[in-house]
Length: 227
Ligand SMILES: C[C@@H](NC(=O)c1ccc(Cl)c(S(N)(=O)=O)c1)c1ccccc1O
Ligand SMILES: [Zn+2]
View 1 (cartoon, rainbow, N blue to C red):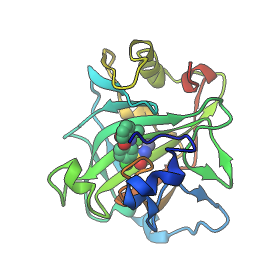
View 2 (cartoon, helix red, strand yellow):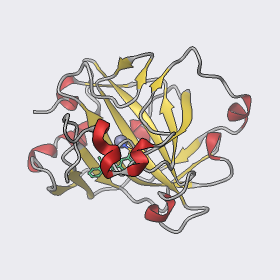
View 3 (tube, rainbow, N blue to C red):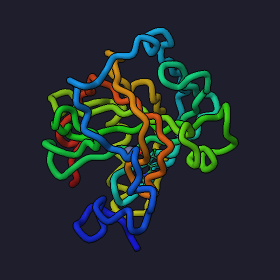
């Protein structure tokens, strides 16, 4: 049974096929800024990240957007809400919609953004593999970055979007020749919201520490709409 986003196979029926989708810490959520509380000890342990630049990364058409496989043993995400554990980049992917008025998974006070980039990491301090980490409540950490549509195109996103014409159909993949540095996807303002949630796609494992940046990055309409 293929899951998707239609009335017959979308989020409202995922729980029939994927029991975790009916759980108590499901993502995405609407971030209500008025009730989000600031947590002083998050400020004490600054969230830090270090990525490598990689070329020839494989990009896949997942049928729900694109996904770049980027296992980076040299990458590190730590601090902030991640306790003493170190998380390593596994992949990054994008969610977007038919128009630039919608497409993000998280919303902020009910407002959707044109799209949302997810940098998926797993806890290498405690677990031996991504698959194993995804079975534990502190197994994954995902950085979410909202896309705002504006006049400037994002050069790094362009390196990715420029390959999509080669992978028009679900399951197709190709290599991105350019060097990609995931650091360039992050906004300059590093304020974020964080909460304990899940994969937003099946099997919806409740294993994700979410870190959603407040500041969106700007991309052009062409960079975030289906063609
Ligand atoms: C879209 C893509 N999803 C992932 O690869 C994915 C994996 C881990 C996380 Cl943590 C997330 S997320 N969105 O919570 O950041 C998404 C996907 C495509 C096809 C089939 C299954 C499937 O999962
Ligand atoms: Zn995602």
